[in-house]
Structure formats: C-alpha cells, structure tokens
Image (tube, rainbow, N blue to C red; front, side, top):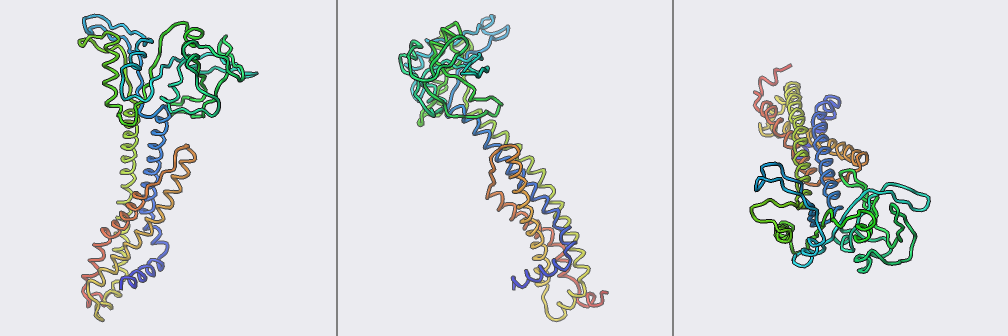
Length: 389
C-alpha cells in the first residue's frame, strides 16, 4: 500500500510540475546551504590542523620571554635573557619523555646560489631539528656531530653563499609549502648552530628550543617538566615570573580547530533557517492542494476510504516533495563545496553523517509541515466534500 501511495504522490507532483518545483525550492536552497557551509567548514578545519602539524607533531616551542612592565615581582622590571647553550644542555640531560630537543636561531639574510640571489631565512640548529619538526630529507644527509659542534666539515655537493659565508650543500629538505599564517617554510637554509652563531649572528644566543614529545608522553605532561628544568637552570625563584615562554602547538591547533568548528556550526544554523522557510512553503502548498482536491477526497471517503488513508496520502506526498528537495539540495551543496575547495585550496571533506542528517531532516520537515494539511483533508465531511465545486 505504501508504494502505491508513493506512486500517487509522484503523479500528483508531476501533475503540477512548476508549482511543485517552486515549493521544494526552499528546501533545495536550505539543504544546499547547510551542506556547503558544513563541508567548507570541515575542510577549513582540516587545513588548519594540517598547517599546524607542519610545524611538528606533539611539539613544545620554548622562547625567551618579554620584559614585564613596572610593578612586577620585587618592584623591578624583569629583564629578558636570551636562551643559552646551558639551557639546551640542561634539557637534553634531564628532560624525560622527549623524542627530540633541538635549538634554533633564525635570521633573514641574502643567499646566492649560482645566478640566483634571494632573501631567505637561515636557521642555525643541529640534526635533532629534523626529528623535532617532522622534516624529512629528499636527498643527502643531516649534520654530523663534528659539524654540529664546530660548524666544520667538507661534504660533497654544490656551493651556496649565505651572506658572506660559502657553504656546501649536504642535503635537500622535502617541501612543506606555506603555513596558515602565510609563511613559506621552504624558503629556508639550515646550517650548524655553531657556524651560524659565529658567522651569521655574531653571538651565542638561541632564539628557540623545539621539544618533540614521544608517543607515550602528552605535551601537557611534558610542559611542566620543561618549565621546572629551565627555572632551575636560569635560577628563577618561585616568587618571580619566568623569563621564558612555552607554547604548546597541540593546544594551539586544537584551539584554532575549535574556533573554526564553532564558526561552521553558526553558519550551518543560519543556513538551516531557510529549511524552516521551505517547510512553511510546503505547508502552504499542501493546504492549497487539499482545497483543490476536496471533491476527490469526498469521493474516496464515500466509497469506503478511511481517514487514515487520506492522512497517509497527503503526509507521504509532503514527505516525498521534501525529500526530492533534500536530494537535489545535497547535490548542489556538494558541488558548491567542491568548487570552494578548489578556489580556496582547502580539502574537500564531505561528512556522510551530515549528508544523512540533511536527508532525514528534510523528510522530517515534510512530515511536520505536511501533517496539518493532511489532517485537515482527512477530517473533511464526505457529504460536504462531494458538494464542493
């Protein structure tokens, strides 16, 4: 019986094609907007996570802090001290739960390779930097221990001039592309820290220390250990603020992903309002349909049809109409999301759960807003219906 009711509903919809199309247009727009917004939002969240992960996984970044304002501990301005080799050595010697600990100092300098000359970021570090940043070599090798300690070594390869220093190329990093902050991670030259400090920076300061946690240790557990070791090494008493900062890249990634997810939900909710508008349109058209088919309803009731049959017929018709709009809306929404992913260079990340929810919600809209017109048709008096012109 249900399939016969569906067939009759399709016939009724086809009988008034233009009116049916205009009716389901609200559902189409609503579902398409919701699917497109949620899919684009999911892609944006994935891109944010991927951009943060390019900096390294389970990563803590230690940097020297900024001077505190007047009125700090002891009534004096807190002096910012750069990170030093002794801080790095203390972490390497005493920190447990770290997979890699690497120093890094950066500076923008002129780099000349062959006939090409460009401004590039030069990073002084050691071989642990590649592990800490999850950075692989396409070819060549990392720094040897002697190169790290003394900045020496005579590996085979092309020559590159960094500022006024001639260097040999020993390896090529895999490309990482741009971060979400617009920074080109591939425009970088790595060189041994000792050589960088002596020939580029002119001091023995360390800008940052990258600490990658191992698989068994979360960064939230590792961070207090790092802080305790550095406070002890830098002789910072408990009553004074630390003169360094520790950034947890995992927490930053989670916070940014949470922000994009919240924004996506808000956009989806705004787009969902049009679904209610579409539901009101279905109710309006179904009421018109009941009025137009009053005589037909009277004939069916007179020859023995029950009220529930009339109720089911109009309820199924409203549901089918809404489902058709939902299916068309899903196709249009996915197409718009695909176009946006290509234009904005974000991942195309459709969610099967969201698609199923959209289908179910569109059917629910049809049933809810079609119930009152269907009930009105089912309660018509057969004699009055037969008299209707």
